[in-house]
Length: 68
Image (cartoon, rainbow, N blue to C red; front, side):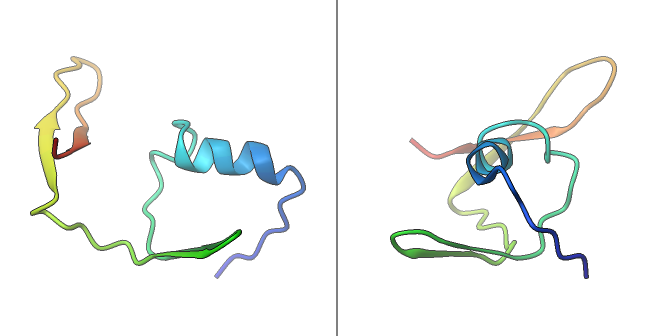
């Protein structure tokens, strides 16, 4: 296990939740506490998501979109 102290929390959370910085990492578990607590267990709920394949010739990755 690796434990890090994040000095710029706002920028880190922006990159973690919105940016593409951590896209190549595999999330196993996360816990975020602000005005309430959020726990991410890393399980994929397939009935909530649809998966399409990015047709980039350089690199093919699944793209996940929420249901409308």
